[in-house]
Length: 77
Image: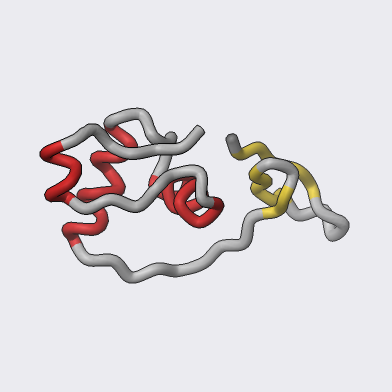
């Protein structure tokens, strides 16, 4: 879960598991955004950023829409 901390310059920085987060821009299709929103709705994350963070850390396994409709969302805890 993310929290906030002041860095050495006094700027408020978002943290995740004790690590500072860096703002990045991503370009995604509407289908990819819908997939992120579905993952949030199913309880796999609190926000799009949280879901992407968990995917990048290997805390969630990638899936496809077809797999999602046939089986529950795969995840690793």
